[in-house]
Every structure is written in structure tokens, then in C-alpha cells.
Length: 439
Ligand SMILES: *[C@@H]1O[C@H](CO)[C@@H](O)[C@H](O)[C@H]1NC(C)=O
Ligand SMILES: *[C@@H]1O[C@H](CO)[C@@H](O)[C@H](O)[C@H]1NC(C)=O
Ligand SMILES: *[C@@H]1O[C@H](CO)[C@@H](O)[C@H](O)[C@H]1NC(C)=O
Ligand SMILES: *[C@@H]1O[C@H](CO)[C@@H](O)[C@H](O)[C@H]1NC(C)=O
Ligand SMILES: *[C@@H]1O[C@H](CO)[C@@H](O)[C@H](O)[C@H]1NC(C)=O
Ligand SMILES: *[C@@H]1O[C@H](CO)[C@@H](O)[C@H](O)[C@H]1NC(C)=O
Image 1 (cartoon, rainbow, N blue to C red):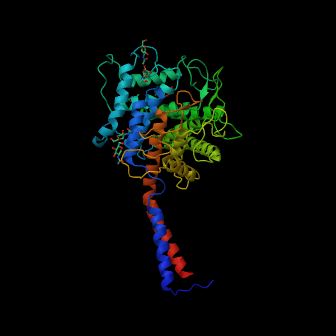
Image 2 (cartoon, protein in one colour):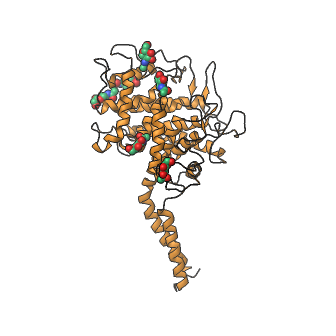
Image 3 (tube, protein in one colour):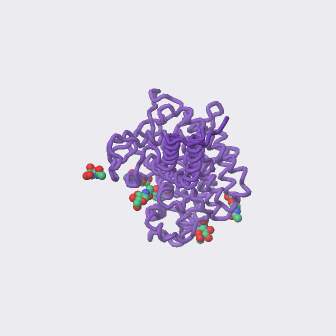
């Protein structure tokens, strides 16, 4: 091939156009947009509705991921976080500390009593989703409500919750998986979000490596029981005498992936990162295999309640909540695992576009008008009933939290990308332009 260096005017013009077009592609925001104000509306619905144990725990994590990333494990700084809350985070953290105080206000435990969960619940696991909230309130020296008994404090409540999980009040499998329920040994995929992140964080704050290994082991054990070899997806509820759900619940696959990513991030940013490389690698693999499995059922970009079943199947329907959570874990995985070209980003972007698409003008302040997947006042829809997972519901606190997490995960992904992207974009477009002119 002979390269000609005689640049014609047309060639130069075309070269410049290619140059700018590819630059624009790299620098402009892509896809359907949603504003901060709209996400605050979603946050308001979340704050109003999160009242069950795991909803409070999930809301707490959403607050950190959206508004106080320094205290989220997905921040790139090393753990533990500062004891003194930076003053610019005071407002953002207030609702988080309010949750901690509310839990302590209702807490029945005593200094010398039996180990207690943070709140009464038939689930052994769900109250523990608030464990990090209580640990951080202790770590940053938050004040206690006046109602709290003399001698009781955040650290005591957190320890009591931890001890409760290992007490005889909570059954275990013979190989040590802690039951999701108190009344019988029963494993739920939800557990992976509720318990292991708490164990790992506890280990970081108390400088106890064994607890990080235990967090990893709980993920490993749950995967060994719930993951289906044939499809790669996780079943929802197994091992119980009654009330099992063998289906591949979409939200459950999301809980598992999201929980394992939090454990991964906690290990990665911890003082034990270098001695837990193998554990990190496994968690990474286990998150990816969930994405691979669920996104093989992504024909409409909105998952059904049981991802492998059509919306028309008995008891099945479209579920935007599980869709949002799974998509959030894809953006997180890409950032967290350092995979800028993570294979499932396209699926997550398609889910984003489907969830946030609107027929109305894009600049509507905090309003939601003309959205297919939000009511006017910002409730995600359609959603599985979070209090009865086999039927469709109307307002889902966890669904609201998943939207907040999806938004934060994509924002952080874009921010992580922008520096490198602008440089690559410039290089690629220049190269393309020059090449065109030469040929
Ligand atoms: C919130 O939860 C508490 C404790 O589970 C319950 O007593 C109360 O009725 C709930 N409030 C609402 C508004 O659902
Ligand atoms: C984030 O901060 C905004 C602005 O203060 C607030 O409206 C919103 O409720 C917060 N979101 C969450 C999930 O805390
Ligand atoms: C505390 O004890 C009371 C009375 O036994 C009970 O109704 C309540 O649910 C308990 N609250 C917690 C947080 O354990
Ligand atoms: C509670 O906070 C104190 C002070 O930062 C710290 O020394 C202690 O380890 C914390 N306890 C737990 C259980 O995190
Ligand atoms: C570390 O955690 C393990 C597992 O929970 C516990 O048995 C051990 O006592 C802890 N070590 C210290 C020094 O607290
Ligand atoms: C948002 O909705 C309110 C109430 O319907 C309306 O008054 C307001 O003009 C809307 N704002 C925008 C920017 O569309």
C-alpha cells in the first residue's frame, strides 16, 4: 500500500469532521438523562417509605452512595474512613445519623443482656443490614438519643447484633452458613446484601482479618447452595421446611451481586487487601457470573420478576426494581473491578435508557412527567411487592433505593471515565482523522 501525502481539501474537511464527531462522542453525555433534582424526588419517596429493617439498611447505603461517597465502601480512599466527619458532609449525613438514632431509640438490648438484633424481625439477617449505620455512628462519635439506657451505646448495639448472628437464636447449616430466618435454617439470596457487608466492615473497624474472611465465606457458602449450575443464576429461597422459592428471583440475583461487590470493595480498601487477593478474585468472578447469567434473559431491557420466565408466565410480570439494582451493580463492577470495558455495560445502559425514557421535555426540574417507569411523583414502576415477592406491588422502598444506587453508580463510572476517556478520545479521533487523510 502506497501512502499518499497529498492532502486534498475535501479529505482535510472530512478528516476534521471525523475528528470532531469522534471527540463529541467521547465527551458528550450519552443516553437518556435524569437530573439530580429528579433523583432527590426519588430519594424523598425512599425516605417516606423505608420502614422495614432491610429497607432502612438499604436506604442507609443509598444515602452514602449518592450523597456521602467518602463513607461508602465504593470510595477509592482506604478504610477506615475519618472519625471526624468532614464538615461539607454534615447535611448529607444527617438523615443517616437520624436512622442510627431511631434504631437506638427503639433498641431493647442491655449492657449485660442476651445478644439482640438491632430490631425485632423474623429474619435473622435483615436487621444486620443496619449494622454499618450503627458502626459508623460509633466510629464518628454521634450522640445518642436521650431515651437510651445508661451504659448502652452504638458499639454495644453493634456487638450485640454481631453476637446475635452467631448465637443459638440463629440456626446454621452444618457447614456454617448463617440462616436468613430465625425459625428454621433457610437461605435467601437477599442475605448476601444484609450480612456479609456488615461482617467485613466490622472486621475493618476492629482490625480483625478473620471477620473479612468470614464475610467472604458466607458469600461462598450461600453461592454453593443457591447458585444453579445449569443457568448460572441464583435461586431465591432454599432449605426451609416450608416457604421455599426455587425461582430465579431477579432482585435476589441483584442482592447477591451487590452484596458481594460491597464485600469486595471493603476488602480492597482495607488494611488486609494484600493478603486477601484470592478472596477478592473469587468475589469478582461470582459477580460476573451473575451478570452473564441474568443478562442472557434481557430481551426487553426490563427484567421480569423471575428473569428466565416470560412476563406472561403465571405469577410473573415486569420488575423495574430488580432491573435497576442489577444495572447498578454492572456500573459498580466496571469501576470497582477496574474493567472499563466490562462486558455487560451495554446491557446496563439499555436498562438505564428503558427506565429513564420519557416522552416529555427533559428539563422538568424535580418532576416526572411522561415517564414510562415512574409515576408523576417519582415512584418507580412496575415493581415487585417488596413485602410479598411473588406479586406485583405499587410502591417499593427498595426499588427507590435501587434507582438512587443506579444513578450514583453511573455517575461515579462517568467520573472515573472522564479523565481517561477525554485523553483516549482525543488520541483516537486524531489518529482516525490522520489515517483518513493519508488513505
Ligand atoms: C414502621 O415499622 C414499625 C416497626 O416495624 C411499625 O410498628 C410501624 O407501624 C411502621 N410504620 C409504618 C408507617 O409502616
Ligand atoms: C441527597 O441530597 C439531596 C440534597 O440535599 C436530598 O434532597 C436527597 O434526599 C439526598 N438523597 C438521599 C438518598 O439521601
Ligand atoms: C422491645 O420490647 C417491646 C416489648 O417487649 C417490643 O414490643 C418491641 O418490639 C421491642 N423492640 C425491639 C427493637 O426489640
Ligand atoms: C467504636 O468507636 C471507637 C472509637 O473510634 C473505636 O475504638 C471502636 O473500635 C469502635 N467499635 C466498633 C465495634 O467499631
Ligand atoms: C476476630 O473475629 C473472630 C470471628 O468473629 C473472633 O472469634 C475473634 O475473637 C476476633 N478477634 C478479636 C481480637 O477480637
Ligand atoms: C413541576 O410540577 C409542578 C406541579 O405539577 C408544576 O407546577 C411545575 O411547573 C413543574 N415544573 C416544571 C419545571 O415542569
